[in-house]
Each structure stands twice: as C-alpha cells, then as structure tokens.
Length: 246
Image 1: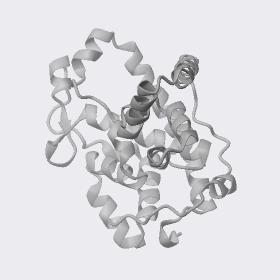
Image 2 (image 1 turned 135 degrees about the vertical axis):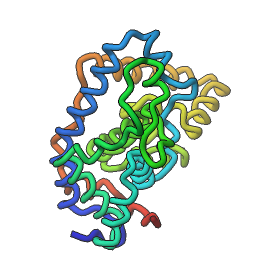
Image 3 (image 1 turned 180 degrees about the vertical axis):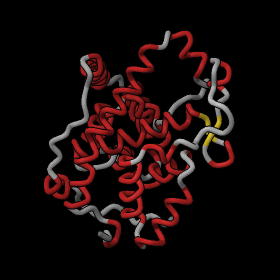
Image 4 (image 1 turned 120 degrees about the vertical axis):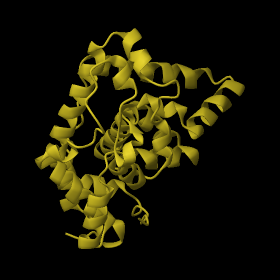
C-alpha cells in the first residue's frame, strides 16, 4: 500500500482511526500512573528541562522517526523502508507490528529493571543505552498529540505550529486546545510577547478560558476523537505534506 509522494490517502487514515482506541487507552494509562505518583516524587524523577514541545517544531514524520529511534526500532524501520520503498508506509507497518505485539519493546531497558526511585531516574534504554525513560515519555506524548490534531483538524500538530508561525490565529488556538505545552514553542512565545507589548487583554482572556476548558476536559478523562472521517481529513489538508528524506 505505497503512498505516492508522501501523501495521506483514505486507507491510511482508516489505519490511524482503527489504532486510536489503543493509543487513547495507552495515554490514559500513562496519565493515570502519573497522577498516582505524589507530586514531590514526580518532580524528583523529571529533569529540570523536561518538555516535549520542541518536537512540534519538527515535522510529524520526523517526530515519529525520533520516537522509533528512542525505542531502539531504527533497524526495524530501516528494513521496512527498504521493503516498502516509502517512509510513510514503513511507519504504518512498524506501528501495526507494535500494536499487534508490544513485546517488540521488551528489550528496551539496558541492564536490570529499576527497583528504586534513584535507579528509575537514571534508567537508560534504546540505542546504546543513550535514551532516558523521561525522554521516551515526552516523545510518546508529542506523537499522540500529532495524531489527535490530525483527527480533529485534519492537520498534524507540527503543521498547526508552522501555521501559527505564519500568523494564522486559528491554528494557534487549535494547537493550544490540543496540547497547552505548545505555548513553549517559539512561535507561541512570540505571539504572547506581542500580545503583552500591545496590551491585548482579550487575547489573554481567551487564552485563560482555553486553558481552563482544557483542564476541565482533562479532569473528566478526555479521549481522543474516534469518529475520524478520512475524506474529511483529506479535504482539510490544502497541500500534500512534504516528503521527508530518511
């Protein structure tokens, strides 16, 4: 099922739609685990610069490939690119294999599993044991947001951020509603700085209301939109996504 010129077709979006329930359940499990850990312990486990918003200034494809690398799946991914001749198809094949067999990631940890907080904090895995569990968690959250944005707005999170950098206000608000951590991205910091200099009270009132609404949805157990209509998504994409060299 090759994807000419890197474009998304209805059958590929059907794949994304069918994968959403499992991705959604995985994110809820991660959020539930995080919420169960006392704040002071959680704070100790995370580095001072913990964030995933930088991923949104990559393309969605680069974001996914970086996640594959962090999970030690680069070799599998490279083999699939050779077999399919297409990076998009290779991504779909690899995600399909993981969803069918999560044991693929069993060998991520280098050495013995952690038994203490200090050991968990220093846990390493992936290629050469170079990646922390915290970095992997950030990459997973960023990729989930990419999928959520595509389902809801027909554009990846990275595309919304790129639009916001071009001054498109609608994309700014769409992105904030998907993941408020996007406010740490440089186009969003710039927009907020301009609003502050211009004393745009309405802008900050709207931002406060958006964050409040997001928090209320999160508290109620927000789910990824599952009624993905592939044709609706295709219509929303004005131009094909760029082909990324791998």
